[in-house]
Image (cartoon, rainbow, N blue to C red; front, side, top):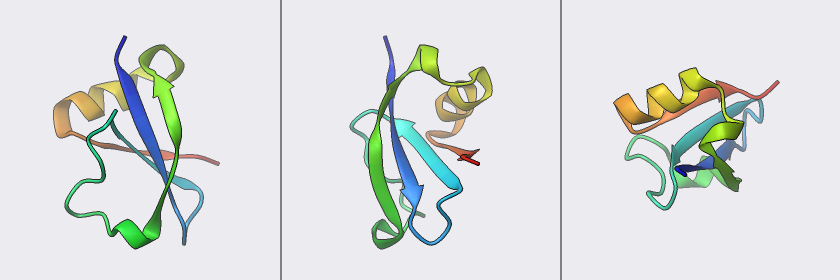
Length: 64
């Protein structure tokens, strides 16, 4: 089962960034602004998030 790491934006906690498990933050993300918040299995995420990660290497999600 595929897993994804979740990072929360420190300045905007309502924004989450998912990446494949173990891949780290994408180049555009400032590591000082993102906090690792855990790992989720594919079955626990909306399908549009999974598709976006597969297509782009990352996906943003409104966490509110």
